[in-house]
Amino acid sequence: MSVTEVERLFTKGLEALAHGSILSALVFFEKAIKIENNPDIWSYFAFCIAKERGQFSKAISLCEEAIKKEPNNSAHYLNLGRIYLLTNKKAEAINIFREGLNHEENQQIVDELNKLIIRKPPVIPFLKRTNPLNKYLGIILKLLRLR
Image 1: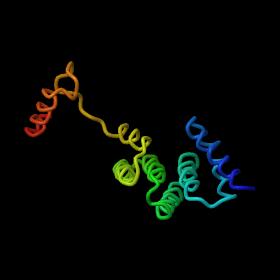
Image 2: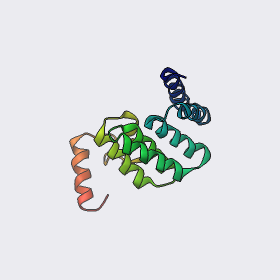
Image 3: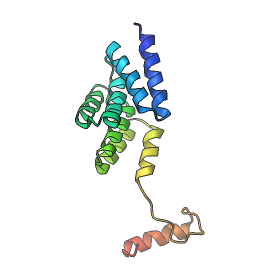
Image 4: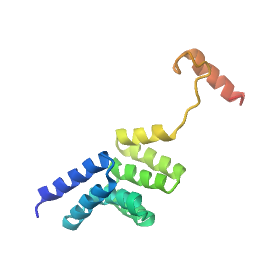
């Protein structure tokens, strides 16, 4: 099998993940790993085995190994953070997501962080959050510990 076959399997795995079909993605990534040992594939495979099979410790070690091989690839941090979320380790997930953003801009990580960080509603709900009145009232109330 050639490199193009690995790329095809990897792409199909990513497409399956995007459509929410974790089991299909797992099959594609598993086939790709058998052909080529690649940190990108390990990372996504790790997320799939954590989500589908519940093999969290193996998944975490695979992602950490991928990060050691390619520390500037934010996809590894994305997958490791998602695995931490599956294990209910929200604080660790947030730290990993932020670390990934330090290496490379990744919109998926930003989306994950936005899902996790719940903001309080604006002080004056009919005004936008960015309105100076809302902004400074919020700061003052927070300093006074009334909010």
